[in-house]
Length: 611
Image (cartoon, rainbow, N blue to C red; front, side, top):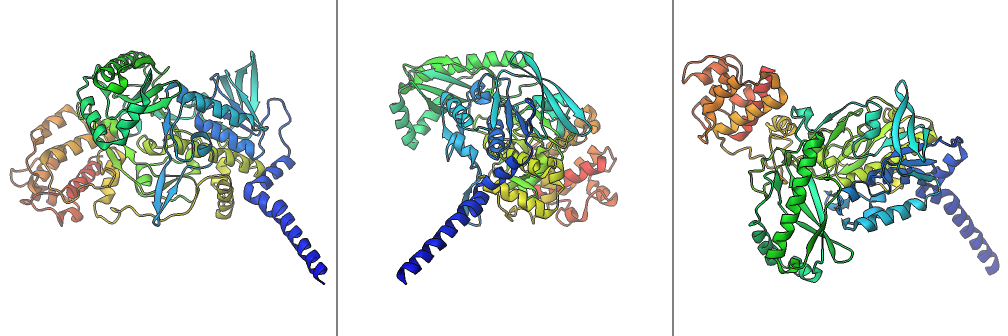
């Protein structure tokens, strides 16, 4: 009897094992999905692939690896000689993932391939180790082929689909064909080849030649690491260091050195990051070359200052700079949807979300170099937000995807959504997207328009492959404030900073200059055709720190619109002409001081009228 029960238990255990191993486990790990792809018709031609990724930027590696791991015959093509990309050229040696506090729990938002490349929590790394690790990871993937030192020549287009890209590789021209292409190059080289529309800098808000500051990182040698570590351990030492550093006199007026980061490298070397150059037109090669020389001189001067001022650096010497600036912002390509600042600060959860993020929106590019190096200009900070699939599908083509800081974000939204960890996660998501589309014989555009049950199934695959993805319902703390709609407009144009705490000082009394400056700047960005020197002259007398009353506010409004009024009767004139909404009239009296919430609402209302 006992032997019979034992035999029965063994049979049950065996059945459970086989059910789990061949039924449940493949679904959990993605092996079943891979098996289904391999059962299908894989491309047979020598230059035919299931997925082609352009660019070995970290986000390109993530896209190619995730696609290959799901069984796609994948080709990764790069113009570089190794997978170093901007990590190598710009000496970018630090990264950290996004985190979010959701329902009281801290969640890391970048996992999967990001963790493989940079570790669980990111941090400092050496360029050499990164390249070696990236090569080792790619060499393990049997479904992945990599072409280095390749050139992109032309695109073969059929309606709204890209059928192939001509590539020069190994001394020959190859027409590469695939159902899905991903441009992960830093500047969107293949998207440009396909004539996908884009804008540069902040052209979407009227300032095309305004870019985020470029970064110049450099290497010094013969560093006393033990002494540097002792500085880091004591807050007092760090404060003393920063105090002494403030005595450094910059070589270039375009340079800011707000905070130096020291990143250890092999052989007692160190990458120093923290030199940024403002107001550089990255679309002008001559300007870039001139400022690159200035940055090199700045780095050498700074090294000499460190030698003189700090004992741990007394024997160090400048070794080398990067081969190019790290450029946080250049081209912004148009997709099916463009992520906005409002989406980010509103903690938006899209039905078609593929990536989660949480970094603040940074408008430091609008800050003058004359202002303190420590000054920050954060428009606002979300708790958490999502980026939908539509941001990664190019506007023209149903099967051309894009990842990285150039994806379809507004110029200001890109300061959060275009960060390296988010780019890597979006690259991984697009590799999975290509596999899902291949198995179901649809394009990414068709997938984005699919019924809810298809989207849910697709998102399950994203999660099974290591991407952090979940539903959330986080509300902006200012969402219920009556002036919030106006704040959303002003932040979209980079004109209002709430900082990390989203504090827009609604109840603070305003100055005349505040109102005048907001009006001029919003006109320049939102309605540039309405700006003139004559308008500027009409408002010049209000550029003071005198308190703003309701009467003076109406004077400024009427003078902006060039409407005549009797002195002391501006408020009544504006009210009679219906220029002030009731929501503001309830909060603004002629002889009372005006608070900033009314100023925000008046500014946006005024621009809506004159447009």
